[in-house]
Image (spheres, rainbow, N blue to C red):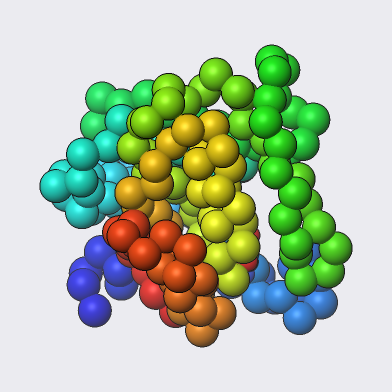
Length: 179
Ligand code: AMP
């Protein structure tokens, strides 16, 4: 295991039964208290995507905004937000998608992405892949092409990567800490 992965895992805190019984929640907030570790994480993402020509980074609410904006700023690229329904103030495009129990709606401002932009979708954690997959489809609906996905954590036993590779075969997918 790379030293960076070891250090990320040492910082992440496991919270059992949050937000509901049976879920082992990966609390990434201690990572943000370590500026040296955050710098190394941003470097790792930037190096991984330096050969991919992207126009913007799209962050998924809410923890995807944290490294998402920092990475976009570091790469001198625009940052675009995908939010849960009802939070974005201007005109939006919405997408409904199925969750394990029930469904969810996400939104993006309809002028957030220029037609033909190549984007990278970022979130803190990849679990089943449903959220990232729906977010990438929403990007496509507003005219973007999705070239990659980045996550701090990949819960690989939930096979999210397979869901994303099936939906977006040419996208580069990275998770820095894999469980
Ligand atoms: P999924 O759509 O199943 O890939 O779930 C990914 C989204 O749910 C991300 O925005 C994560 O922040 C959150 N999430 C899912 N499972 C966990 C977990 N075990 N610990 C922390 N966050 C999680």
